Length: 293
Image 1 (cartoon, helix red, strand yellow):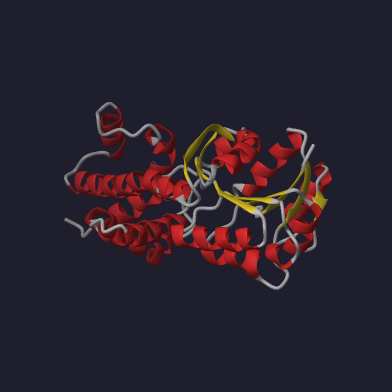
Image 2: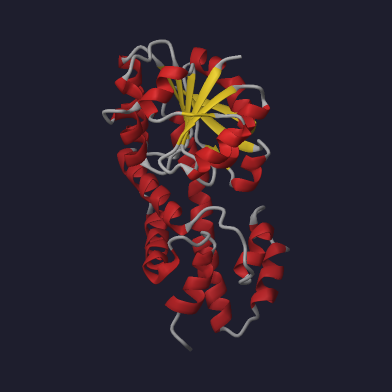
């Protein structure tokens, strides 16, 4: 069985990495903070002292990091993944990044004689725990064939979108309507609240209409103010929106709806909701941004 290294043990990575051990792979891990590494070591993983040490000891490296700066640091720092010989190895990055960053890192990897696959995911912690994510992959046909068995550990469906970078573009395409949906739902709920409608009534009616998104039912407890785990926070949604706008601009696509909803998420962050679930934009718009009637 090939050996795999996993970098990035945040909300998603910490539940994804154990699946590799369950599938029978030999796993080594690295994370900037050691507490989550210790937990995986207790389950049978090996701890690597640096990204460089990790890359030296495995056949395949999987990364799931927060943003473009983090991924560039992990690959390009003096003790980064590419600071050691990696010829013949495969790198699979599952972070949500900007397409130019993906292509830059991919070229750096190829310059070292290794292969690169971008494979961002759709789904939150709950499906990640049981390997039911939607994985969108950018890779050559040969690299996709090599990566697919590993990606199957994480995903209910693996979509080969095209060459490197196309998985990332598809991920932004998938996330954009969701971001706009929560922003527009926030405005709708605020309008209804100002008009004297009950929140529970509005949500119940929306759920029974063509305005209901499949995920809405799962988010109603959070919208109603019940304590719920954060699946995808407001700050991450803003990060993705900025990537979407940058990508749209490069492709010559006007994006007025995306620009508008970015303002709403930015205001929500300024209001202290950066770490809250993205649907908390509804509560912020309704309670904080709306002028009393």
